[in-house]
Length: 300
Image 1 (cartoon, rainbow, N blue to C red):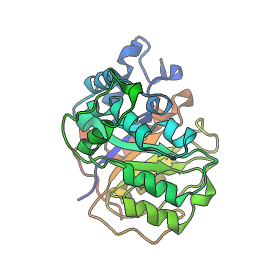
Image 2: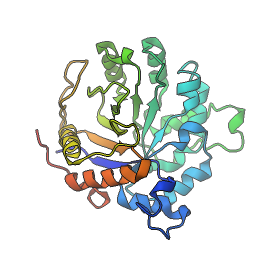
Image 3: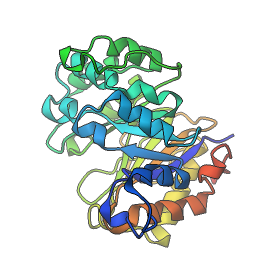
């Protein structure tokens, strides 16, 4: 028994992808539908920059296959402007903005720390306790939104299912056993981030894995060759099988499970490297959209 593997890309609206990944004659309004047929999940960046509207999420849901899932990047107002201080109302606004319209297509929520943000255990513990762990809990939280969402909110979930959260760090002060213990206490996933400037921490801290491949040595620009792709394929198989992988760990080994779901996104979007690399990794793992319900054999 292994977890479900989803490999995708970070975003889908890039001019450089037109005529390379996207067919030349494809209208921009059909790009999401096209990408969703190639990948089983896509990471949404727009939710980081501003609050969307319910009609945006309804439209995205309508353009994607039934088993597809989105990962949403959490509000940058919470992470970068407020730096996780007093997060209740901003969290309510985020979940009231239309997120619930995705229903079963809502995958994990990614919370990205700014590079200068150091480890604040008490502040993060408060934030983690507020995070909703189901769609119904997110709907309840959304009802606390402020006046900015008046007349444009969605506070009712179409179904109930678990809701996952992951955090991406960029400051070396997070490289500590205390941070790993905090994440495990709250079942928050530690993002495995591959890039040239930030710590790469390989600790497993939750019941799923969230991985972002940003490109190295050139951030957002470098592609992944066959050797690198095979390394990430081996790691993905190990994670899906419930185990851990090579790399730097800062806490004790995680308890082995029968399997863990894996969400892996290529964020090296320059020159259409992300969709190319994602397709290559999918080919190595046989986990494309047509294989969403197929378990991948464990290599460990």
